[in-house]
Length: 158
Image (cartoon, rainbow, N blue to C red; front, side, top):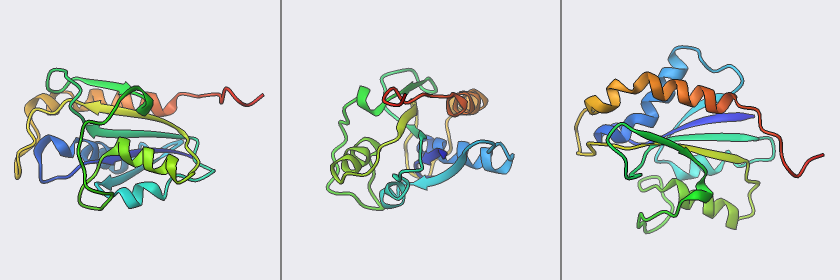
């Protein structure tokens, strides 16, 4: 099974980008060989997807990756170190990288994971998504669909 996960919250402007992309994929019936799931900031829900039958995950989230607002990178969680300070795993406070590390510590099966991190401009409460992200919205959709559609061979299998 393959998944695209949207992380974020609608109450903080550009932080909603992952949710909006998943919503668009669902509303336009673009789920072909994968499922698109709105995770929000619910780390407990996210952890339930770490099962033996999951082969690929693509996480879409706003991320401070040091680029211009609206630019994005696709990377592996192993390529980065989270700088976010959180008190614990909860449904109100999230960190994708720390959730994956937590799943590893618990011995969950870890599939191939990629993150489509989008540089936000505006994370203010009760704000709209910025024009920079609106302008690139279709680009994000295309990148997500291309990434989840890739075929990966497990290097440990024969």
